Amino acid sequence: MWACGQRSGKRNQHFGSYSHDLEGDLQLSGPNYTNNWAALGSVDYDISTNDQLRGRYIYNSIVGVDTTANLPAFYLNVPAKYHLFTLSEYHTFGPNLQNEFRLGYNRYFNTVPAGNFPFPGLDSFPNLVLLDLNSIQIGPDQFAPQFTIQNTYQTSDNITWTRGKHTVKFGVEGRKYISPQSYTQRGRGDYEYLSLQQYLNDLSPDSIAQRSVGSSILRGSNRNLLVR
Image (cartoon, rainbow, N blue to C red; front, side, top):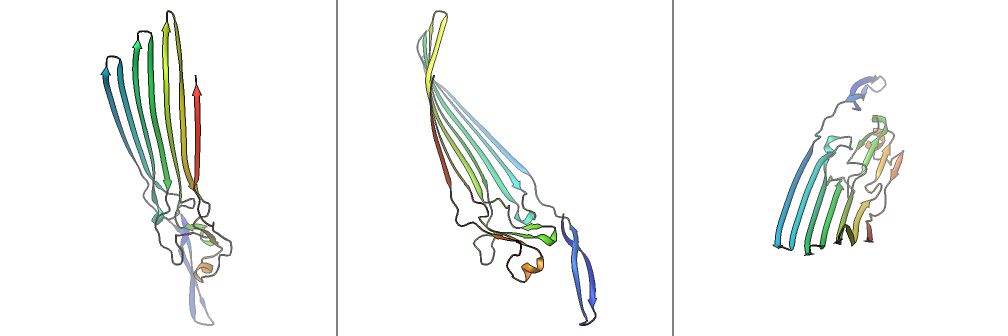
């Protein structure tokens, strides 16, 4: 609920004019849903009696409505997508010696868009806050735009050796992470006005007026090697 509904007024006896203020509660409703998709793929192939190939793929998608904005006109879909792929090859050298080789890939993608809402004189729609109207925020999600991507690459090779009552396992595993991210605070600008009249008179914000310069992407990367 946001203030801007109930009307009260009074007459100016000196000039014969009539002015009124708008106050009260205005109830707004907007869409709020989540769509989920999932897919699974599986491949099993026996190359020979000593070699087997196994493949798996899993896909998940979750798309919901970002209701952080105060006004439903600025609600946008926020997608989160997941990919997982594995490929394994099993080789039997003999009754006492087996080898397992694996390749894996995992991807996570999430973005919070700000939309393509036009605003005169600016390249994107800013965040406008009117403090006298219950601090209503006009504009998209104040934390948008931002995104996070995480890619994980994995490979491993393990050998199992059996001798009598003893079993020995050893191998090596390597992983690589690539994760670009972007979030610039106040990238579209935050402008807060003590009153609606200040904004309608095209005056400078009298509470807060801040905007970041430029937008950067953090490209995280990491490598790990494990011997066991």
